[in-house]
Length: 118
Image (cartoon, rainbow, N blue to C red; front, top):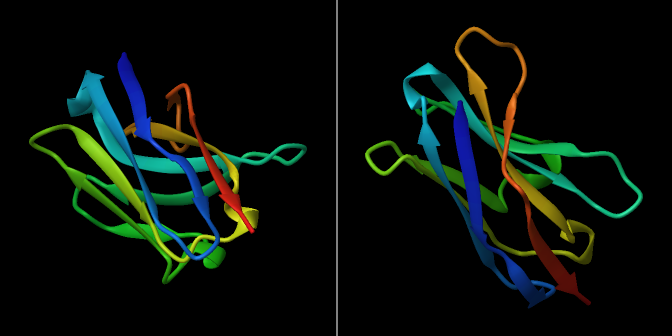
């Protein structure tokens, strides 16, 4: 089992920056990727970005150039730096982890709210 706890987030005006963190614990040796998803009110949850244990990254198109995902393997912590935020970035941001033997993200944090005002 893997436990994920998000922190950070909050409220910011459009054009501003925020960061969120995800502290992981448990059977981390079984994990090969961690990622961020978000869900806005009335919308489906969508992938924001993910990073593999080797450091490869993937970003959804609307986040490229604005968001940066990183991880500190020694601390089992993942980060998401969000710049040039837009009101449409308002959502609950979830941390997720994927096992080496899986094709999907199976472990989830409780989510943290990010609100961007215009």
